[in-house]
Image (cartoon, rainbow, N blue to C red; front, side, top):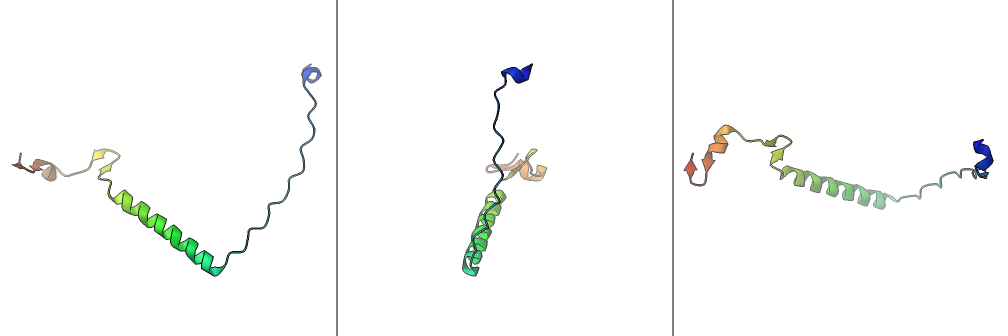
Length: 72
């Protein structure tokens, strides 16, 4: 009964093949490699500045007792 009220759909067009990737020169490959290395280095540097872990502050009890005014 659903076929009476459903509009007829045309068949899908055939799928085209993907175009060939452009040729990349050696200089461009070297520049891409350097850019990726720079991005990875910056990511690693930012991660090292984060002082807390997934469980909160990760410091020893000995470090926690020292303050700017002395030991607690």
